[in-house]
Image (cartoon, rainbow, N blue to C red; front, side, top):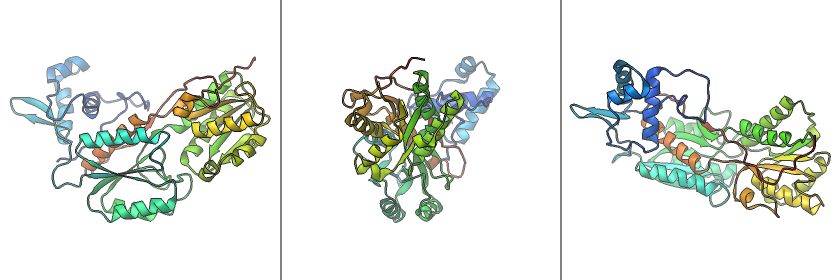
Length: 381
């Protein structure tokens, strides 16, 4: 099958705004590719005629023909003499490597089942099998998984959630060996700064900024945070936390910043009790995710705090923890795209597999807004 080149996702997709003006013919490319990507135009289905596209986009026939010729060149559509232009079949063919390895830090709880479901359904629709593994967020398990994949000959690509992505990884050698073998690699939820690999994730900095602004808008001025130091999302969310405080002209104290790691979360509430000691001057706290926020609520209440009256709290991911609540507190949170993120990662991976040596930017970051619940107390100004 001819290689597929990812279209410029600038104008059509509302999740990313780059401020770049899109060429007229690319408007047609973007629109048609989005329809194909989402299944609104299926393999073998006829695309709108040149006249219809000219009318829709107020473009000349020459411009529309140029757009279609680019899609034909990239293998997304094919022209049949006397019949029109049809969507090409992007499914894995017989004899091709048709396995995509999917590696997440965890599998069966929190946001992970929905993300995996989105990946699996999209891969299956295109004729790919999913090889699922989980690393338990440990570099040793990640190394074992990557070594196993390196020894296989049927894996076309890897959708990988990096392990402890804020820290230098000892597994860079395996990533590079897999790349040299021609295996496509796409990271999800985070990325390794030392590897130039595409990723599909939240825009963690902007989402954290939105979360902290919800506290600022409620009148809070002394806002602390509890963030993970070993995952890259923690670094990016700290960036958003700082930006919100600085733009609002609020005082910043590093005494109110608390860093925890994966082991702290597994080991229970000791680290959260220590965090509370550093938050006693604060009226609000921004937490790395809903899991961390839920544990923080329990520690606050055990120490006589009323949530949100004495300490307001915001999480991220809009998980079941946020929606169902913790001891009567339903969390204000930023939603994680979950299944949509999985679908987008799988769509981009399929394109990476089929695009050959044609380069495109498969990185995509979702923008999300705050879902307000009863974990924020509105202070009088």
